[in-house]
Length: 84
Image 1: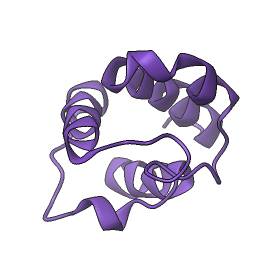
Image 2: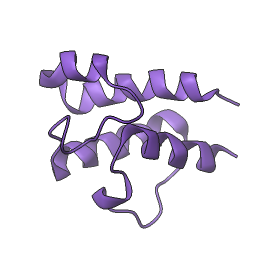
Image 3: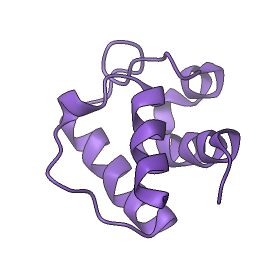
Image 4: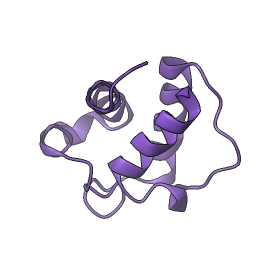
């Protein structure tokens, strides 16, 4: 089982893949960082992120929308729940 910190580090790599132009902001991010308001993620960026998370962590997202993940912490919570 991955720790929350390990999930966060892996997620940061995924966020960089989804939005490589935003490297500095992503590297400074924490669990309270907002995907849309702080990082400027679009629905396309979120789609890339979801696909990369599915491939990296080995599960398929259920019926979720961008609004289900206001912050990086919310994404980590979802990943943790799927890995249990």
